[in-house]
Amino acid sequence: MTEQDPPSDAADAADGMAELRARAETLEQQLTALHRETQSRLVQAELKAEALRAGIVDLDGLKLIDLSHVKLGADGEVEGGTALIAGLKRAKPWLFAAPSSSAAAKAPAALAPRQKMASEMTDDEYRAARAALLKRRG
Image 1 (tube, rainbow, N blue to C red):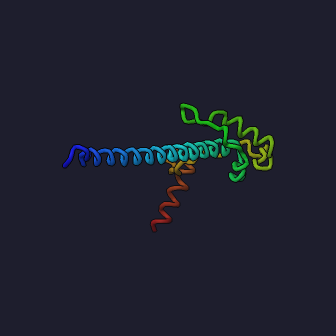
Image 2 (cartoon, rainbow, N blue to C red; image 1 turned 60 degrees about the vertical axis):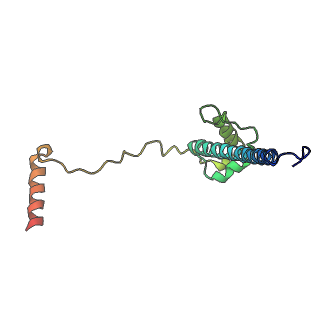
């Protein structure tokens, strides 16, 4: 080996470093693309939730919103999401259900049906329930 020939270990190390740098750059690009996609999906999900709260009839109407200026806040909420949906509601009211005055009352809470205890019944109710029970048994 002469003095002019570079040692092969140094050349291998330089090739290895170049390969690692290229791989790191590729991974950083993939990470950046994945971060953008995740942010976009999170914005879509938040806007869907806000639109459903506002009474949207067809979620395809969200495609009409320009999302280029929409940003997520530190808390994960869309900054100005409520105002954005309100603007869509004003501009395209047919995408949202009209409020109904006949549906002002809320549905009762769903509770499991329970039998009335004998101590809660009147005498007539107790006699009728007892007669129905005895009739079913025999």
